[in-house]
Length: 109
Image (cartoon, rainbow, N blue to C red):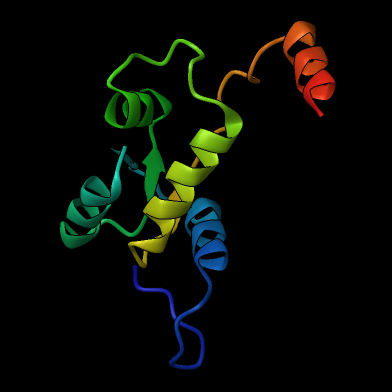
């Protein structure tokens, strides 16, 4: 399904919303870096999902056990999104800690 508006490409957000609203089953490929995003786009997928575990393993060489911060994940997602024309879906991960982490971050200011 090619989504266009008056011959112009719609925003990634609008295209993703249209794909989600479509009654057909949405098959999503997982991506973890810029190269995997480009491979998925070249394969013809109209969207992809960022894998938190894959991103952690790709960027840090370590499993997704809470080492990456929100800022690390945002930087990775921004870099991936900038390299492709397809919309990417990302989750909020595990919340980045508990009350102690919040206290330490506020204390660091």
